[in-house]
Amino acid sequence: MIHNGPADSGTTLILAHGAGAGMDSPAMEAFAVGLAGNDLRVVRFEFPYMQRRRKTGKNCAPDRLPVLMESWRNTVAIAGNRRLIIGGKSMGGRIASMLADDVGAHRLVCLGYPFHPPGAPENVRTSHLGGLKTPTLIVQGTRDPFGKPDEISTYELSPAIKILWLEDGDHSFKPTKASGRTLKQNVSEAIAAIRKFIL
Image 1: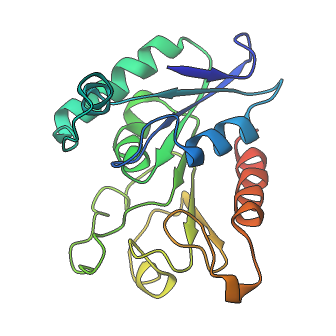
Image 2: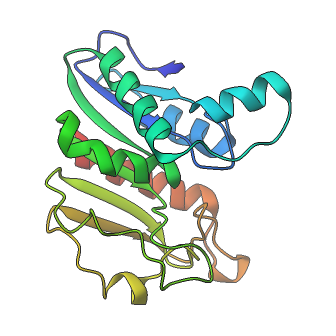
């Protein structure tokens, strides 16, 4: 695990990584460092398959859903009895969204939710989002191939879900040069919105 912010903070945000990069990727580092403060501790962890990658140096596919969910539950149990926020990047946030209600999370934050595989908008991953009760913020780039505004507007999502659209951002929130925006701007906008949402 990686911890940012004071250990005695009354609020903890647990962030899980996406399918392709670990807990210390530049994106995870930027959000963890940017969000942590005296009022918020940020904890990052890795799923078993990513731990195996580190040990062996070999690329391997993500664990099956039951393993990912068990890993999340174990991490929540370690966090202790404090105000708990859960979430993560892409796959990590998706798994968190499946557990948020069950583990009693106060808030849920998803960074680039994978609503469907790129190029396969018919294969939606939203069946559990219609009944989600945990207040949720999904941060999504308007160019994200895993779910664009025109697609997501047709989904039946819980009223507990709010979506922050980052202008011209892709799945990593990076905009095109032609947009006049920068990745730093999009990340900063997201961090400010997340802190306002959870604190």
